[in-house]
Figure 1 (cartoon, rainbow, N blue to C red):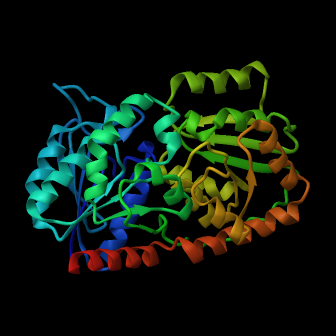
Figure 2 (cartoon, one colour):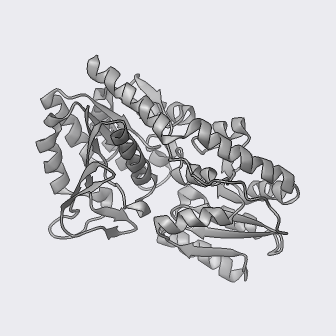
Figure 3 (spheres, one colour):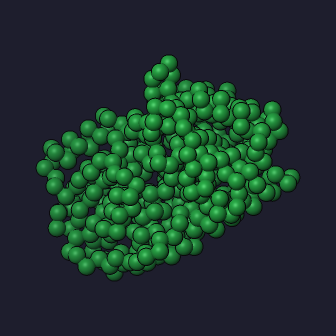
Amino acid sequence: MKVLHVTPWYEPAWSSGGTAVSASNMCRALVRLEAEVCVLTTTDMGAGQVLSKQSYVDELGGVEVHYAACGLAGTSFRQGAFSFTLCKNIVSKVAAFDIVHIHSTRHVYGAVTALACRRANIPYIVTAHGSLMPWWIEGIGRPFIKKLYINMIDRYVLAGAKSLHFLSDFERESSTQWSFNKVSFVLPNGIKKQKSAFVNKSNEQRIKLLHVGRIHPQKNTLELIKAACQFSSESIILDIIGAVDDEPFYTACRDYIANNNIRHVRLLGAKSFEEVQKAYTNYDLFCMPSVVEGVSMALIEAASFGLPALVSEFVGNYREILADGSGVLVGVDAESISLGIASLVKDKEKLDALKLNALNSVNKRYDIDRVAALLMQKYKDIVEN
């Protein structure tokens, strides 16, 4: 089967967020199932940077990847990872494939791909990656413009899809208002199993907390920092890894730490993919009390290293985390977050049990080869129908 993936971000654009990671994992796994996979993407790598100023083609894990240079009139225009070249690539290549997979919404490539697929009579599906959840539309940016775009353009892209792909039941339920399509399926992000994963038991006096993600109001970083500040440096340490995606918000986080002379909360900035993977082995708890979140790749990666999660009820797979006993649920305010942390500071045996459950949860739910096989079957069902 010949499968085309259209995504604004693809490896190694790790700073752009979870879409690049999840799409890359999936495409590599589909190749292992003997699918012929091609990716059309941009050179945008997130954090205001580009992989290259020129378009180029590469092969990564058996996947043919076409990187289209971003920019408008010679600039590296960041918004929406805008690229005329990608639009041209979509129009010229769509007809050669059996099915097309669009990643994310509210970008021009979805509309271009939908039109090209209709002209060539090629079926397509859309993975929203959490972008249809209400907070994404109404909570940040320019809600009026977002709603206008969705109602004027994206509704036809979504309605024309053979199916929408959601990463959890919670995401599908939350996205009902903006889906415009009654046909959908749920399949989580996947990750390759760690060959040497183990449970790092909490032998130290303090527990080590880790947060990985863009410094952005969505991630609720400031409330997490405030919660951590209620503990002494002998009880916990909190390290935050991530690129700055909202300068005023980052400044507020940095100033809060400085003004309160806090030494056990550290903003470590962006790290390479390899550095982040290595970091997971040095911590006890992964913190993600986001105000909106799909099925975070960072959260799943952390769990694959035996890191349980501290999450809010707005994280896409919080129900699965609770069902598997692989984390604790907190609110989005500092007080609630601090109570969740305190429950583990006082009970190291509970924390160790959560670590083991986190490993088991990944093996049960997020094995990328199993997830890819289910997606491949979905592709076949759509094409044959």
